[in-house]
Length: 188
Figure (cartoon, rainbow, N blue to C red):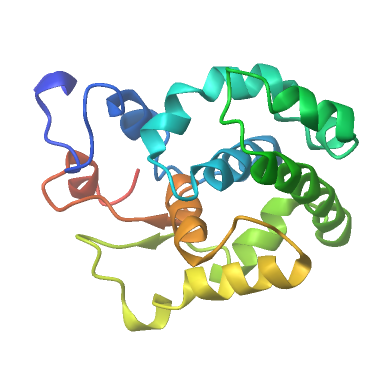
């Protein structure tokens, strides 16, 4: 069967198909990609993921290839410049939060050896696979626990819903619809 004829999660459309097939739910351990997805997911808060996904390359250019070391040093002038950048979502609060989150990301890297080490400790380095959003009871509070810890550390725009979307995006939690070919693979 051609990949074009495969059934996918209900949310997938022509624009999100490549992201779904090649990225979403695939476990990520690379800090560079973990930061990129953290930045993008925090901008998604209150918006559609498609909006963010369509601006992804613009974000990459505007935010120095998602380099937290550079972003952590953005000043008020850079934040004002980004507020006028049509390539991204121009929310001053989210831009300022990105600078804040970059600083905290670096602090966690320093403390845990990597952001990946920090993040994956919440599941004892295990991928949580769920079908049709039937989250097992022992994992129901995962997003709340991670979001609470991020908030305690000072992260912005990473509430429970956004954190859960982040955990799905980076493959800590894999939950493809049961009709999706990726669900039938068992894991990605």
